[in-house]
Image 1 (cartoon, rainbow, N blue to C red):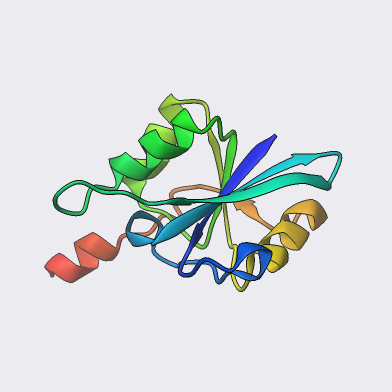
Image 2 (cartoon, rainbow, N blue to C red):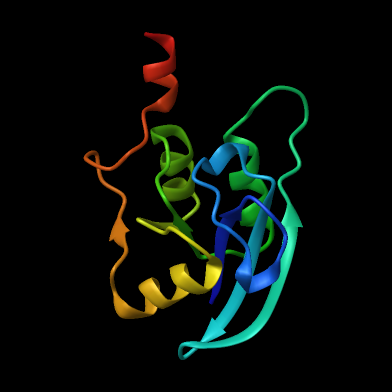
Length: 125
């Protein structure tokens, strides 16, 4: 299974998780099987033009990702992930290693209306 995590920097498994999914610099894609890491690679979050939170979803879908671990996520990308059959878990903080440990331990939460990010709505007020 391929898991993606948004990053602020490119330091492999020691990378810092970006708290803003759509504006992250990179994504790390971790291929796992039975809680064992098989492969790790980092991809750029390439956006054309203005901020577009749907573009990262397209990138990760093309990469074959089946699960995304985020600190939080907005309603639009969450909905697009759902349309592509890609799961999203919230609550990932710290480093990639921290997020994977929390995932394997069952500490991350499925996306719900209660934990969606509404930063753009707050900025507009």
